[in-house]
Image (cartoon, rainbow, N blue to C red):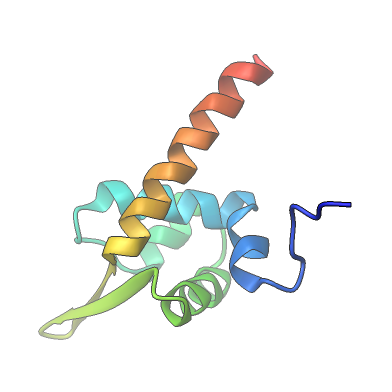
Amino acid sequence: MITYFDENNELISLLLHEKPLRIMIGLRYSQGKTYPSMLAKFADCTYPHAVRILDILERNGIIAYKRKGRIKYVVLTDKGEEIAFLLEELYRKLKKIKG
């Protein structure tokens, strides 16, 4: 039997949930000018939850933090850009199917 989902892969487990998906799409359109609290609002989750998601994304090379003075911005890496694009495409296709 072919297994499509690897429950032990934290990245796959993470990205197939609503809040992380919202964070990824929010990052895609932020043009490098967003920070964790803005992403938490966009994803409709708490700040600590958003930070946990961002920590996993950073560990997997999906996002990076850029400092400008005292402000710490969140940006997608090249790999993150590609994944965010694909996730958004999948979201749009699934939305069409649903209704």
